Image (cartoon, rainbow over all chains, first blue to last red):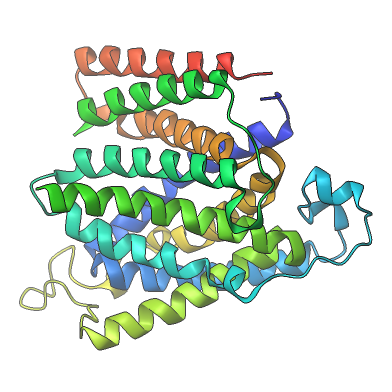
Length: 161
Length: 149
């Protein structure tokens, strides 16, 4: 891992996520988790549209993997049809979370298991280069990083509820 | 119980899949475009599910509309900001993912989420809980430090 702007962005994205979940659950308390998520997706689409317009001219904000950048900055990258469907597993998350949080596992258990699922899935994707992302061999260090952050997160989750 | 555990793990995989697929789309549309597609498709998909299972719910407490948690229409205005945060969140995710990979993105996003979560809940917790959580913070920071280069 190399300390970089990307790191700061990913960390801040996580912080934004925590605030977002708080705010969305407030909306859910006024409706239902799924209805709230539907409203949030609709407003999110409006927000994303504004972002698209605002950053239209800023080519550097178009994310390109380093490998692809080497291929040439003007090289056109095509997207397969499934890459437009990322919103579906994202929307499903709300549905499944509503099921597991109200099960014997509870909120803490759901959060912890979702973390483990995310990390395992990320490892599979990096290792096999799934979904067209660049292949990355995990180093022993990566496992240490995952071990530390997962156990720390687990501790926070189970003390929190 | 085992079924619920499997479901929660699967849910984690769904979060990961959404992240990676949006990251892949960002390669051609840009991170902002990926965020737009994510939200439009998610909006339509949730709309279909809500209709199929008949779960539209704008009034939780329809018997007591006067109560604070009456309906979605008297939610405070900032309850609606989550959507805009989501737009930015997906864009940041999609920008970063192809550059540093799925594991690093996941680890960093989770770390940021946990750290911010502590501060969001801090006011209603006892000191012993917070000190326990600080051990968790220490572990996360150690993890980030180990992986720094």
